[in-house]
Image 1: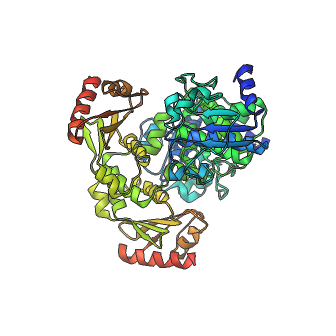
Image 2: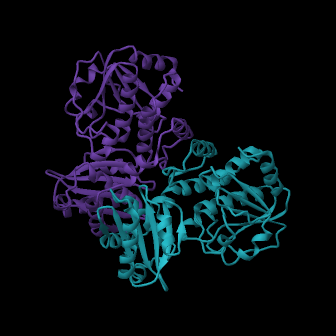
Image 3: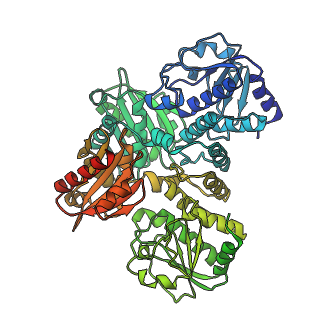
Length: 316
Length: 316
C-alpha cells in the first residue's frame, strides 16, 4: 500500500500536458512495459506523452514499444518521469546529465539514490510493473486493455514469468487483475521467455559444447567474439546466456565470460548461499548477492584462471 | 465455483478412514502434486492414506513424492480416489481394470469419460491442482504448508509456470493464496522448469544439431535410440524435447520423432492455427488441437517423409 502522499505525487503527473517518460539504459521488459503502460494511459487521457531511452531496444522487446527500436525525444516536456531507474547513471549517456531535472522517479529498487525531485517507491514490489499496477489501482485511474498487457509483460519480465523468489502473493493478485482485462498471455510469454532465432539456438549449443565444470559445482561458459560474429549475435542478446548457468543441475556458482573490445566481461550467478557480489567486487565490479558482474583484463584463458581462483577462495 | 452437490461429494472423502489415491500413468507434476496434497491433508486429519501409480516417477518429480520413485499399494482401502485421470486407460496397466471401483474422480479435463462412481470436475481449471485448491477452499478444509507447496507445484506444472493460455485470473488467485502459506517457489520452479543434468543438456544440443526446418515453418527433431542410449536418457525425460520446438522463432508446426522398439513415436505441436490432432489422427493417433501424438512404422527417414507430406497437405 502506498501512502496518501505517494498517491498524491503520482496523481500530479496526470495534471501535466506534455510528459516525457525515460526508461533505463539497456532497456529490459520491465522498464519498457512500465514506461509504455504509463504513456498509454496518459495518451488515452488526451495528453501528449512519449517514452525515450538512451539505448536501442532489443528486437524481441519491440512488441512492447509499438515496434520502435529507437526511442528519441520529439517535444519539449512540462514533466519528466522515470520508471525502473535506480540511479542517475542508469539513465544512460543521453540522459544521465539531466537527472536533477526528473520530476518523478517511479521505482521498485530499495537502492534508488533519490536522484529525482520526487521519488515514488515500493521496494517490496517484484517489478516496476507491479508498482505501477498498484499506483493506478490506489489512485483510481482506469487502465486500457493495452496498458494491462504492457504491465503484465513488465511484471512477467522481472519475475521470470512468476518463477523467481521476488514473486509475492501481491504479484499474482496483480496478474489476476490484469488478465481480467482480456489480455492474451501465451504469445507474449513465448516471445519474452522461449522464442529464439535458429542462429541463436545454434549459438547456444556451441556455447554449451564449450562449457567447463570445475569441482562439480562451478560452471563457466566462455564466449569468444568470433562465435558471436559467426552467429550474428547482438551484444544485448548474449545476456540471455546466464539462463544456461541456471540449468546445470548441481551448479552453485556460474559465470559467462565474454570477449569484448577491452576486457573479458564476466556475468556471475549464485544458486546457493555464495555471495557473487563479493567475488565481482574483487575485480572492481558489483551487483547483487545472486547476480553480479565485472570486467577482467587478459585473454579468455588467463581470465578463466583468475576467476576460478577467486571463486575457489570464496567458497572455502 | 463448484455446486453444493460437488462439494458434498468431496467432503464424503474425509468421512473415510483408509483412502487410496491413484495418479495417472506417466505421472506429471500436476497429478503427483495434487494426489500428494490430498494425501497430506487426509494424513494430517489422522487418516490412513497413500498415493499409488502404475508407472515410475521421474527422478526430478520425487521432490513431490517424499523421494519415492515407486508408488505401490500398502493397505486395503475403504475409498479409492483418482486425481487428474481423464479415462480408465490412463490409470495405467496396474489399475485400468479397477476403474469401476473408483469412488471419486477429481479432474479438470472436459473429456473425462465418467468412468468412476462419482465425478468432481471443473473443466475451466488450468490443472487438477487448481481444482483441488478451490475444492478445499469451498469445503472449508484447511491446508498445511506442505499441501500448499504441493498444490502450487501441481498448478505450476500444468501451466508452464503461469506461461500458457490455460492460466486464468483464478489460477493466479489460487497461487497468491498458496504463497501466503509461506512456501518457497524458486527452488521448486528451478527443478520443474530449468534444471537438467549435464548429460541431458548435451543431449539436447545434439538433438538441435540434427534439427530440420522445412518451408521456414515446419520444425522436425529426429531422435535416434543410439542418441538416447549414449547420453543415458530415460524415455520419460525425452518428453521435454517438445519445449525445443516452441523455441524456434517462426515455427508453425513442430514434431519430435523418436525411434522406439516398434514404431517411430511422434509428438506434434502447433504454434499457430493448425490443428495437429487432425494430422495425428491420419496416423491413428490423437490429442489436442495444439499438442497431439501418434506412432508411424518405418525408418526415421521414411517416417519424416510421410509426416512432412501429411503436414504440408494440412497446411495447404
